[in-house]
Length: 310
Image 1 (cartoon, rainbow, N blue to C red):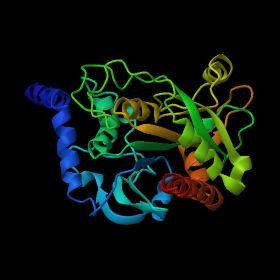
Image 2 (cartoon, rainbow, N blue to C red):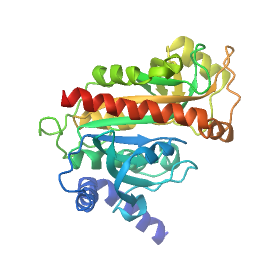
Image 3 (cartoon, rainbow, N blue to C red):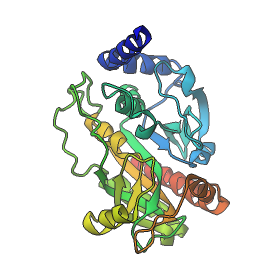
Image 4 (tube, rainbow, N blue to C red):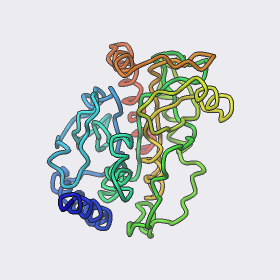
């Protein structure tokens, strides 16, 4: 009973001292930033997409476990390292793995969701003005095939909202003002960056789509009824278990966002989603799919550099 009360007190302390813990993590990381580093993009590399990190010219690689208060990854395919470096001339932070809500949904006081979005807050504290989310998703749209990519035009969030609870004492990176209590989510995915990502597909253009991402808690894959409701009733093109909470917080912190899904399984016309985590991982381990993802993201940053240096 006593140990249970101590644990409860610790989680309550995490929630109550959240701003302090975010700032402590950011201060720890700031000492590793290379000289003349200009924070431009933070990018989260989702399930199986960690190979994209190999394209980053790394200055510093830091395991999550070494960063104060940083959430630890537990899902296969999420390594748990942060990289400061450069990709195609763009200085960025690469998050190799994420914490999912389903891993920590049993924690009290909304601590689970606070862990999920903790890295995004840290990026904002370090001055990153743009956030790029990648994920693995099931294809609801019947025109999507396994191994395709989807630029996220908008999302439908079916997880607890990441801004529930008390308003945090953070500032926005775009204007330095306090974060808003009521955050508009129209245009959550920046149109300019989304168009740039569509252009970056290049020779892989026939594998690139532009659609709506539906975020569910998982960890179960969806029933036939759910898939039909998501596709026909809600107009979703792909379904996954991440991204929306991160983007909600990134927008609240004043960051511009762009998102891309890799379609790892195709949900049948009758709503059947007959997949499992091993099959999803197998698709992401395909050299063809990895090369497609890697080259598209790398070309996005090349186009971003040209746009901003021009």
